[in-house]
Image (cartoon, rainbow, N blue to C red; front, side):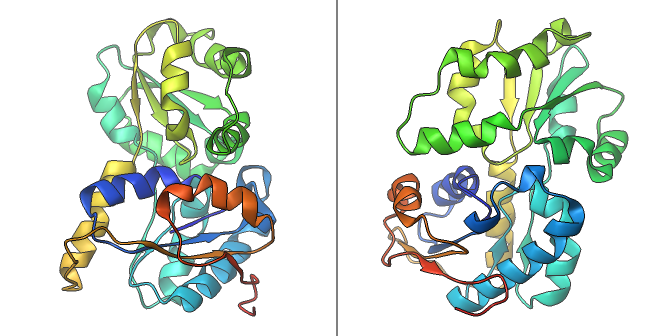
Length: 265
């Protein structure tokens, strides 16, 4: 599972719930965190080289790109480079449009994802005529990281994001919100608590877990009955104590190892 930070944890929890016997490795490009404020020209080659190096180190059977930004930019290149299957994350626009009763959904993402052609094409193809309010929320990435370190996330910190969802033209009709960054489901409870009314908060985690299950069947890999450990963590920079705190639920067997984006330890 690859990400620039801790967002892949939201996907990993869904995978572990569906496939408790699966051994999970994590590759964290913390040396280039966060991805959401970097240019496409910087990110695309970085993601490919970094994820490829980490896959070579852990020798996993499947790569899950647990990051919307990385998925929208680098999936074709990663699939060309790697022999293993590559599973990416797509914002849950289609199920959100189907679930909305008012025909108005909020797409909450990093600024890069909100403004990317990929996202606009996704909306045009799958929103099914729904009014989509694009909500840039880059601050949620750092707030999610802080939460996993045990720091509180307050209503005042979330207030600007809540205003961008509900206090804009059409915001009074929003009944479904897409959490289009893998960090954001980590704040689902806090966002729901601060919202002025109940809405449905959707993400892609469960769909990604089902896709991993499909690939395991295709590869004819049999899982043990007992839960698998968090076997190995690779990072692109130091800062391991903070990462170990955030990922403590996966009980890694190693101290995180630094693997350079160029593929050399």
